[in-house]
Amino acid sequence: MSERLSFDVLVVGSGASGLAAAVSAERAGARVGVVTKGALQSCNSAKAQGGIQAAFGDDDSPEHHAEDVWQSSHDTADRALVEVLTTEAPTAIHWLEEHGVEFTRDNGGYRLARCGGATRKRLLQVGDRTGHAITTALRETFQASSGEALPNSPLVSLEQSGNGWVATCLRKNGDELVIDAGTVVLAAGGRCYREAEERGELSTNHPGATGEVTRIALDLGAESRDLDALQYHPNGGAWPPTMQGYSIPETTRAYGATLLNSAGEEFTDPLGPRDEVSRAIFDEVNSGHGVETPDGRPAVLLDTTRIPKEDAEISLPYMLRRYRSAGIDPLREPILTYPVLHYQNGGLVIDERAETTLEGLFACGEIAGGTHGRNRMMGNSLLECTVFGRRAGAAAAERAAA
Image (cartoon, rainbow, N blue to C red):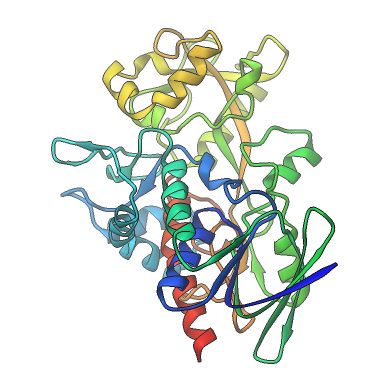
């Protein structure tokens, strides 16, 4: 059986970027539909723990933030996109607060941490479940709007038609769903879960992160960049088994944890860019100075005993709960860690309005490339989702109404 629907703006994906786009498009007066591969709650964004960057410190500025992004990208990011990202970061935080996100505060202001690659403290957090808080708030906003959610309806084809698009989705019961849309926003994330499976590695990603929507866009002729640049999270859980693939929040290192080899020696700057820290761990293990998990996996030590108890209880409660439930107290003993496949740095080429090289087709979040270049700083993925999700939704609504 087949059903046909029509929207001004169709959003593909319900992570932070898709939800931000859907909310923005609906607020701009568009009739909005959101299709997802799985449940509306299923996404990588909800698993993001560390936080979101924005320049609020007295010694900070969007210009400092932009320079940190540029340096961490090793001069490969799109300067125009970086300026948009960092300039709009404070506004994006306030927009999230308007939708119910309550960031952790300290002494009347935001509790800011310095993250890897940053020269200032600018990481805002909601404990260590920032992504969960953001996606929950935006999802509730969208569900209370006039927009329509169509879960368990993965996109299988997309084609241009007249002044708009025709999207075909295949519902889990086998029925076909055909959607006419004035514009389309692709926010379906990356492909690291599939890549990890093919490589026989661990990944932090949700099982839905398999990249089909990127392939659909490429087959349509959309341009891409840096698709080979996949990022490892430096601190994947290596032991116990229930924590394997878990992304240990990098805020552990912001609050004092450091990386040690088998001799108990520090071997890298714990607050270096992600790719440099990951490479240092790989090199240390390959040189014979790593440790081994009880099930024979490579690892190094993350000395979390250096984190002050107050900082851990305020900013790392979820991590503490998970490890303690597995019989390990990170404040009493170091934990075993090893890099895990985490993020697709590259993606579809977009402009400052989040439009791809195909007119009327927008992209935001992990599926889009350029904002981070070939190496992303922590805390900038949720920011990118919010900043460019808002831009994509507003621009898509405007284009659909033209």
